[in-house]
Amino acid sequence: MTVLSVGEHETVVRGERTGHFDRPTLSEAAFDAVTELISDQELSPIASRTFHQARPAIKLSQWVGVLRIPDGTVLEILPKLHRHGDDPGKSRELLLKMLAAVDERFRHAPSTELDPTRMPLFEVFLRYALEGFRSAVRRGVPHAYTAVNEERVGLRGRLDLPRQLLQLPHRAHLLHVEYDEYLPDRPETRLVRLSVERIASMTKVTRSKRLARELLFALDGVPASHLVQQDFRAWRLERGYPHFKALEALCRLVLFELNPLVSGKKSTSFAVLFDMNRVYESYVTKQLQRQFPLWKVQTQVGGHSLGSINGQRAFSLRPDLVITLPNGSHVIADTKWKRLSPNDPPIYGVSNADAYQMLAYSEVFQQGQQEQELWLIYPYIPGFPVRSPIVYIAGNRQLRLLTIDLSINNPF
Image (cartoon, rainbow, N blue to C red; front, side):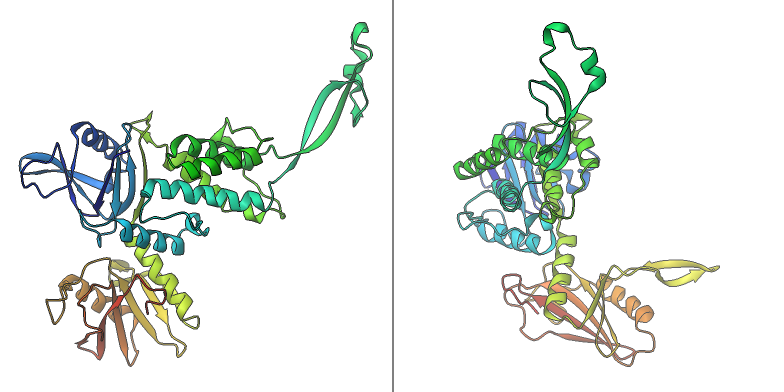
């Protein structure tokens, strides 16, 4: 399996590397397969077609994750802190750490043998799904009473009298009976069984294959789902099986995201991708809520605008975070998944548009507040000052440039 690790927003060029070419490249067949995959309307935001030195290329966007094409080539798109040619291990660890905080599919503690610094992201995703399935199966497989109608020698349950009266003479010694049996055959377990079978066929890691076989043995009495959409609609868990709730998202990951439709046809390509802007915003929110439990942190607060026209809102405002402090005052914050420029003081590359946007937020959300504090929250870049710079804005407003170190557990 060929794995090409690149960073978000990089340019990938079609064809073989020649001379001093400094861009990541894909073979012509692999490149064409990737462009076909991103031509699907749902995947079009991932990249756009372009040219580099007169050669066809694709320009990646802020989406990270995995693209796998039929010939086995995997395009691994990592957070922008990674650059082509760097060791991708730390970038994988960073991405998985953030996903574990914001996405329930990655909250199961991975086994100690799972090393994202060495294992491709594709295999890591499959292993996380297997670990989730194993954790739930160990706590008990859901069962349900299923109606059984059969012909047998002895009486069990209820005699089906209408059918028995029609019994042929040479089969008079057999009884038609009806009874309920407590079986693990139900929509949830059928979907899990099918998901594990799919993973077993996709993974190339020996230990993951072994774990898949163990799970299939534990689900021995469960047939694989043949009506996937219908079984998802019938997914219902009783009070005794809350540990199976998270598996619905894992099954959707394996059965849908790993097996997408491309141009209306089944494809052996797949894509598991995440918008880093949203991942970063969610991660920052989770960290604030965890480290400052007395703060009320609201995300994407809508219903406000900068002005109005004939009674209708004009220029809608939706800040990433509205933080209510214990004293009742509000701090307005925006998360920016951007690289600051440590060597460009005093504003370190903060765009005018971002500053104007924060001023508009303050005008609407902090009216009448004596101290108006605004935060722009960026990922930490080595060389950035330890003390947060403060930009003083008219109207007693203070704009702080905060950075959080994503490599530590308590970044604030």
